[in-house]
Image (cartoon, rainbow, N blue to C red; front, top):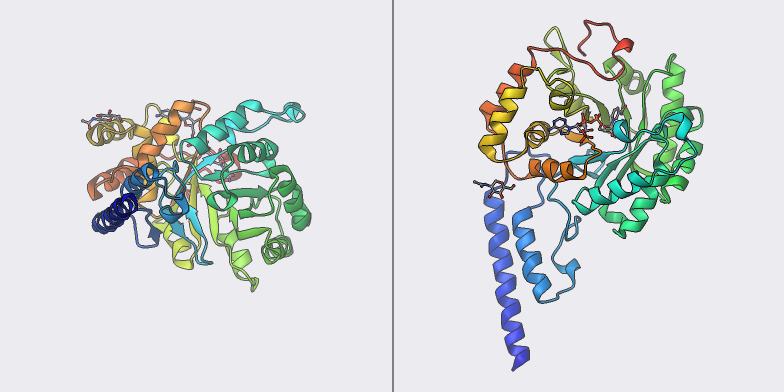
Length: 365
Ligand SMILES: NC(=O)c1ccc[n+]([C@@H]2O[C@H](COP(=O)([O-])OP(=O)(O)OC[C@H]3O[C@@H](n4cnc5c(N)ncnc54)[C@H](OP(=O)(O)O)[C@@H]3O)[C@@H](O)[C@H]2O)c1
Ligand SMILES: *[C@@H]1O[C@H](CO)[C@@H](O)[C@H](O)[C@H]1NC(C)=O
């Protein structure tokens, strides 16, 4: 008798789940087609129902797990999928050389808070000197490895990339990273330099120690050094400074769509510059207005602008409460007019924050 009731309830749950999923699919967001959406509200409801029946959670959840924020996934050309909102452990968390021997417990706590808030993509680097803290946080979080997307980057170790990844993996206490990036092109001079480092990256990918490989801070001529060297693997991602005040376009020749056409996906850092670094800028008023009209934070509006361009947004914070503000980027959509207004207003100011001295002042690429 109880068993029959139980079965009937299960049936109701299963059919509710199906209906909810179908309804959710009708609302598939304005994110472009390469983005695999995770049908968040539907899942959350199914998970809610499931937990009252104590069904094993693996029957009803996707990659993200119960508390994970509903991050859309960007499908890479190599088949891997990147959660489109990332928590970074550079800038605000970068360790100064004099602190090299200090273990940053605050970063462990913040990384765990980011995971708790639902972030599943962590953006790290050898250069930030805090992979050990990230590794500790991952371990303490107890989240299964396959639910996480971990990026790290090689800078000092470019002369011997396979050795550099071993050192990073040891600090991270991991067997592999999801994405491994050449942090910067500035130490690469000759065609040989580029091709040597890229061969090292290919070796790392072949060994399985990185699922995907890419670059960071590469302008088009840097990318072409690799593309023209008959690589076995193409760079799958370029992580670079991108925000409304640097739209990566010189004399009407845009760089971002060119990369996307080659199958090189873009990850944006300094993403919140319009809010964090330009308090007098032309976007402050529009972002606040849009935030109010969607009842979200201004940072959520800014982050959403990247997602709707098929771009991974990387941000960070030293304040826990920001994590919830950032997560609101996943709960609404910007209209086409709002997207366009951010592009148009953004063009009124040009700002490069990451090593501007390395570029010609007029170079906006
Ligand atoms: N590949 C590379 O070479 C490279 C270079 C730079 C960065 N990155 C990556 O990108 C990550 C993000 O760093 P970023 O500097 O580029 O981040 P960002 O998103 O441009 O800025 C983050 C800062 O914005 C502030 N903020 C958040 N909401 C705000 C608001 N509503 N108003 C005013 N300020 C606000 C936060 O300050 P509070 O801390 O006070 O909350 C936070 O520290 C790094 O951690 C790193 O992983 C990579
Ligand atoms: C706005 O958002 C807040 C919290 O994010 C929520 O409590 C409130 O009900 C929302 N207001 C409206 C009008 O939706």
